[in-house]
Structure formats: structure tokens, C-alpha cells
Image (cartoon, rainbow, N blue to C red):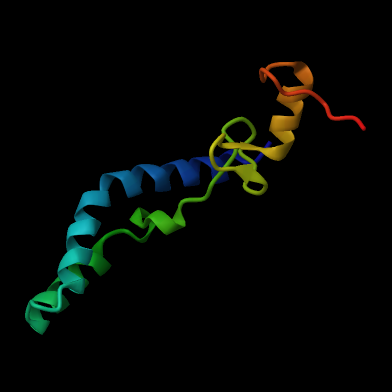
Length: 101
């Protein structure tokens, strides 16, 4: 089990990134628009830099929903390889069996 502080920090980042998603998207569109004047784009860049750093989506880490483990996490399932194996062995995932050859 991961430290609760690390899990809570990541959850806070997720909330912030969802909250500021639209605002960041609009500002980035203005910044990338070459038709606008340099001054307008610069002001948009300043507004973007004023937003909290943790509101950026790249700061959010994929963590296991069961254990909070940060590495070895399957994106689609949102659980780690270890938790997936444990659930498979317990028979909680339909169709998943331990392989043998």
C-alpha cells in the first residue's frame, strides 16, 4: 500500500487538472494562434503561468485504484499488475486463469 499522503497529493492534482482543464485549453489556443498579435499571446502566456502548476494534466500520475501503487499500472484497468494478478487468483476477474504450460 502506498503512502496516503502520496495518494492524496495525486487526487488533489486530478481535481485541479479537471477544474482548470477548459481554462488551460482556451489559453493554449490563444498562445498557439499565430494570427493574433504578439502582445495578446504574451498576455495569455502570463495568465497560463499564473495558474497552479498542479493543474497541468502531465503532473497527474497513473496510480492503482486498489493499492495506490505508482508503477506497473494498466491504463485501461487502472490497477497495478500485482493487484490484477491477485484478483485473478481469487477468481474475481471472469475468464482470467493462471497460465500453465
